[in-house]
Length: 226
Image (tube, rainbow, N blue to C red; front, side):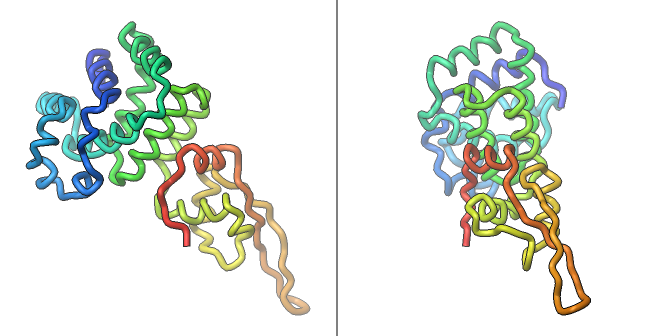
């Protein structure tokens, strides 16, 4: 997605306000057509901006982008950002800071490609932590990259490993373990299980990686763990 400095500036200024505060979760979960019939949705400035931008061909799949952006804004503006740090971040973008612009472009790209509402919520938590200087730039990049490539259906297993409910690969869905390991969320330590006098099989002890712990602690996925 090609974005110019003006678009990034408009987007960054609009997401850091509470214009989406009256948008309920049920509203965001409604069908696309129902969502855009709402007067509340129509009255949010960024909705009209994205739709107008979409007419020029700069952004695709505008309605999904709006849904994800509204969820992102709802979580972003829940009062946990330190105002001074937020103002400093927006000011850097206004002044043409290349690094800050790339950070916003990254957010926009993820929101545009995201289907699951929960991912937009987790993304907002990462942004809050980054603006509050709880995450380094490298950590922010790694977390947003893995979020974009992850499967939400694997998150329950990740949380169970994080909570100590799952300690090894025995009797687990191995393809999920492989995906979590491939994202760098967990580390595998192989061991051999002997069954009877001749048969052996390979299993792995599982432990959280540094980035996996950050994902669970800062992202706090709202996934039921059975």
